[in-house]
Image: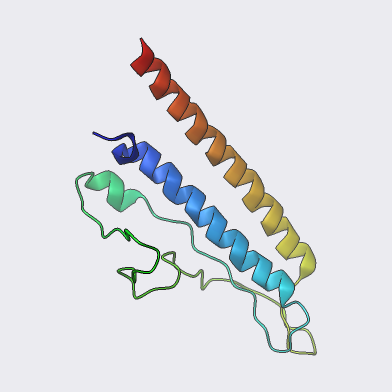
Length: 130
């Protein structure tokens, strides 16, 4: 079994990809802070319950960046539709403080997941070396 097929590493990698995509969405929110009628967006966290229930489940994999993903393209992560925001008189709803808090929180979470992933790989390497 390749190391990339270990379920926990796959979930950690998916979580890191989610944090990268969320950083892109949050950066768009900040960049459009002065755009009239712009509404901030966010991503819903990935749900690993399905993967934990059936570890042998097969999924579609893009083997080339030019291939269209199984979801019809775009982000493979769901948008969070539960956002509540206040709209300013210009029609924009981006709050810099809230967005920067989300960006900082997202960065800290990504760093923690990346550290856990790195330590998991080091642990596997140690086990293989012995």
